[in-house]
Amino acid sequence: MQVDRPEPQVYLAQALSSPQLPEELKPFYQAFERFHTNKLWYQLTRSIEAFFAVPASASFRIDLYDNFIKDFANKLDQLKLASIAVSVARTYSDGNLAVSFLDTLLPSLDTPETREAYVLVRMERGHFKLLLGETVDAKEAMDACEKLLDQLDSVDLAVHGSFYRVSGDYWKAKAEFADYYKNSLLYLACIDVEKDLTAEERVSRANDLGISALLGTIYNFGELLMHPILDSLVGTEREVIRNLLFAFNSGDIPKFQALVPEMAEKEPFLQQHFAFLREKICLLALIEAVFKRPTSDRVLPFSIISSEAQVPVDEVEHLVMKALALKLIRGTLDQVSSSATISWVQPRVLDRPQIDALRARLDEWTDKVSAQGEYARAQAPELFVQA
Image (cartoon, rainbow, N blue to C red; front, side):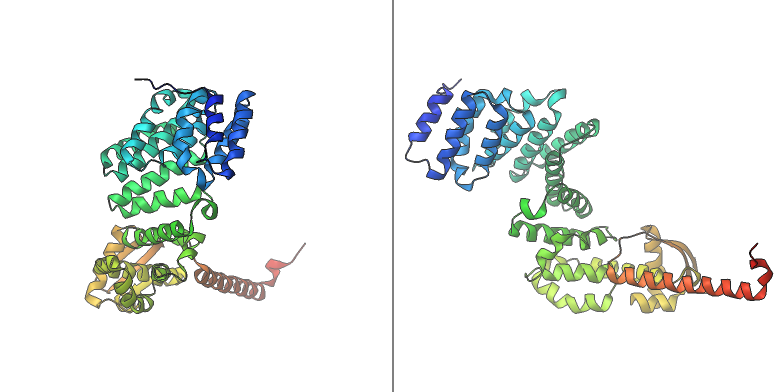
């Protein structure tokens, strides 16, 4: 059943004369009238976007869309229209109504020319489905939109951001830590963290990323450590997450043990996975022990590994085999000599102290090469005679 709508000019005139319309919003309605009358669709779109950016406009967005924007929706840039529609959907207090609203747009956007707009609306629809607990629909949207995005040569950052954000929320609901971590970092790469996230959202996002890094099968989270969002945890009750991340990244078992009481008090969810965390930091301590040694000193007796990783000697072999299975290292075990020969360590992003240590090793290597060169020159000066 089609609902009769007033003519756009009539609707705007009625809205301007309404006592419910705040004074700060009246200039927007006047601009809407001027741009619509002159068919200046680009300027009208910009005015609508500016209107939606004003918090006081929240209670007027649905009405404006239904009685004004819908009348000329096909004349607007469809990606801009999709973005406006998403903002409208977020003003619904009922998730089912938001889904129904977005459903009205999808058929008209399902064309080769409007794929980006379709993905944006489909993924935001998936967001509301997640809020309603309907994860199957959200997963279907993710799979369908991923295929569409793969077919596009270029994609607006807002579209990619929506895809990664909703995908991350889905994996969070499924407690798949590694997938959440990956998608959330990609989402942050698509937005301006300071402008697009509130202070509370930054803390929540950093906390979730930290927990996923600690509990997921992720052994290289240097990228997160260098991301400015992690600084939002400083001075909050969740700062322990940040401190744990730095301890794990450097395989610092004493620091981890010192943080355990605070972790148990403030992050009981992590405490429930203490056994996994303990094994993980032992693995990272092993990696750090190998990494900080020169390549000429990569044969590690079990006693050294036991000391560095703080595990009993009879558990060292299991620890090394675990690291080999996770492809964190490559090498061989010698049970006869009770040693491990490590030929390769998984590449990772280094923090500043690790970079400083690497620089010191490079300086030492340079000095050795220079010394060898001077020795060779002294032993056979004729080889260095310049023509």
